[in-house]
Length: 188
Image 1 (tube, one colour):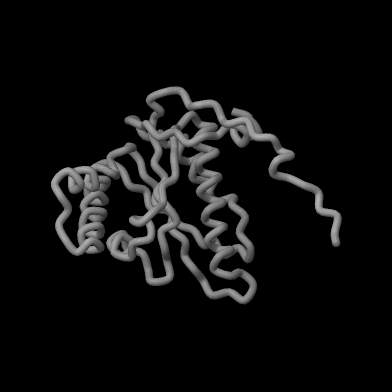
Image 2 (cartoon, helix red, strand yellow):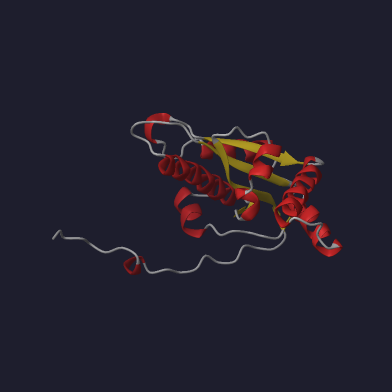
């Protein structure tokens, strides 16, 4: 797929199944992440690839963290739902931001670099015909989840990128008018 077509038409695809991206697709998707804007060449991102039975272990991490945060065991239906969360796709990439003290690159800019890497992966996945979506939320912000995944004290989860084979054609990208979002600024 042409690069501009992928950029103009990418949408999240949430209903995913086996097979996961193959080796060539992964190479293209993962290499795209490494081209994110990166002030100071800090490379503040790293990624954990979770698939197969490791998804079950990730579900157990989610459950322990959720129950610890709530202070009580979850009802059975919610336990099952939490354990099954990582099974929504055959491949999950955990995006991690490694925050580094730097005189010219504040932490927020390092987080934005990781976000740029994730966006590049999502666009590359779309171009490769791989369904993908990015999830954040309470589990991404939960320190127990980060610790269980082996993150250092200066690292944080920037999100979970779910990837797999789309089960239906992607919806058309919404048509947005450029002029609704861009305006010329002429100074004072």
